[in-house]
Image (tube, rainbow, N blue to C red):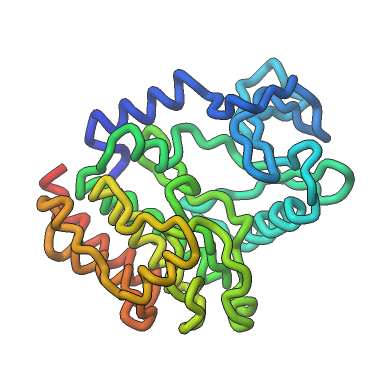
Length: 310
């Protein structure tokens, strides 16, 4: 494609400031530098319920090169390490079967022993969640470009037989050039697993497709497209289409089948973009686009139409 970097100076400066001025986003991880297998953990970056992420170098080159890797490992003293292990294992499986520029690769792993870990490349920049917190909204032309990248990564993931199953802004990394990478496949599910029903509800309710919650329709690739539609809406409107605090509230919202009109929040959004978002967020999976590849293809056309506005 013809884009090489964000043309909007504000967005570029926001991402660059985050990337260059503050590499450490985890203020609670007071862990001294340590050696883990062949990796030297330089500094903590983030901390989740079960895992911690460190910026790291290869131990043999520590001190000679800047840290270019991210190591995710189990947090100390978690109540149920088996859950964290299963998430690391799932991320490794996806990383072994999906190779795409917009999907984070898994470079190395060790899933046995007392401290399993996986190794990824260090992705400069910030999550889309942080970008939205700082910028509020994203211009339609740039949002189309970024969503198209995510759709391409999802298409590769789906072709390999996986659902991401937890797509949300905090699981999307944006580098200073505007390149978007899908991360955190700990909740990913194989298509065959979806045939047994939605199972346990996990993830963030605001981004979940109705079929995860109501169980009226099969979970599948179009479930990820619903989540992508919510993200698209949020990027343009500066807020999520729904604010859901409980499963009961989620069920009520989705039974109403009332998709908000994005142009009420942002009149600069074209009718074509509005129509696509409403399709992606349809409560009925069969009314959503047929695939992530179709979404990406439609976004390419919209990208060209909006190019003169960038």
